[in-house]
Image 1 (spheres, rainbow over the protein chains, first blue to last red):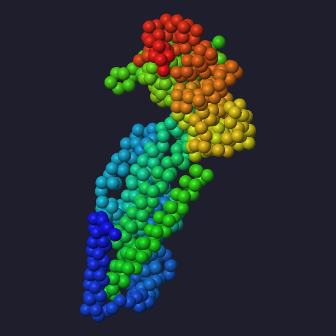
Image 2 (cartoon, chains in turn blue, yellow):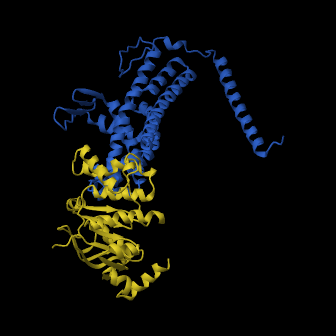
Length: 298
Length: 249
């Protein structure tokens, strides 16, 4: 049998990868033996002995590390789900404004997309936390009477209280991601043949009705893959919560690693959490995608 | 009797000073079939697309079904009123690919005229029967041949019971053996007294069905004649040259 040049290259590359992984595992095991702490997850059930500002379920410092991590996981999930919804609403609105007939809305949305996309997310989060909320000091803004009040304690809307940390993370992630979603929406709508617009307009339909009965159903197959990757980015970007002091899974993990001195176990938990979360998001989107494409082709 | 379409000195320029429409004045009477001919780029499509507001114009007057349209661009409501009474058939059919044939036809009656679904579907089936394609009602556009799709497009345009039908090269995208089934459907509509403006290169259709032939070149109306005169003894040198060209094909 003749071995081709390509196969030799591939074999060498595989060998290189195997060596690299072996070296890494060797390093870890040498270091673990040297520090003498070994590899174990028993610490998970010891008391965390730190307080959490926000916890969706009852929590006290005497609860275990595992329970604290679970609170962090729920906090992450909460901010991701709300940001995902808000980012989608803002993004679709901006994306439609960008291609609409209203000159002012078009210019404003183009400016919004430019500014948001050209500045770092970390900076935007800092802006929301320190400039938008903490700088209010003693001031309480009540733009629509007692229904909504905004202060350095966060937002109170119809009796629902959101902390300043949660609010700034929610707004920061939503606004940042919405600019990208807007571009995905615009691209998808532009991918639909112009003849479809002329066709429904000729039938006397207004642009709004035509948009949701004719254009958006045809744009969705082009929008969904881009939307999925923006959702995944949002989930990963939520780890910047640590910058505004929101107790998400990453922030809590960080504290735990400091206390226990177990970075390897900590990072394994973190990696698996995000892997699980993002697989959940992308599979969910895949199901939606399949539903849409199969209903179209019947 | 008032004309259905009356255009006076319509002018439209694109950037670089190219005139798509150059001082065009025409009128279409009720029940009349006006055939618009001319080389590509002569402004035929632009002209009929101004009749239902798909194209704007820079100066002149246009009156469609008694509704005056100006050259300013803010006449959305008037244009919508016109579109509810004027049907349009496109070269590329432009059916809605994600809707069934029946849904394609009932969309406007349900959304625009607020008809009940049952009633709209019943009327759609009558139209599909007239077009000879009632057996395809539950299919999707991609499952039909070009000729069938164009007949669905005609049925869709008829669903709002229009007073005027505009055809923008309805057979140009079809296979040659599929052209006649569409032309026959159009011929039957003309026999029923439908007012029509048809942009086409089909000489036989123009001769048999047309009441008037409008010949355009470079955005200008070169000649308006009855088909007998236009095809046998065209007044204009430019028209005769064009007719010789299409005979060679």
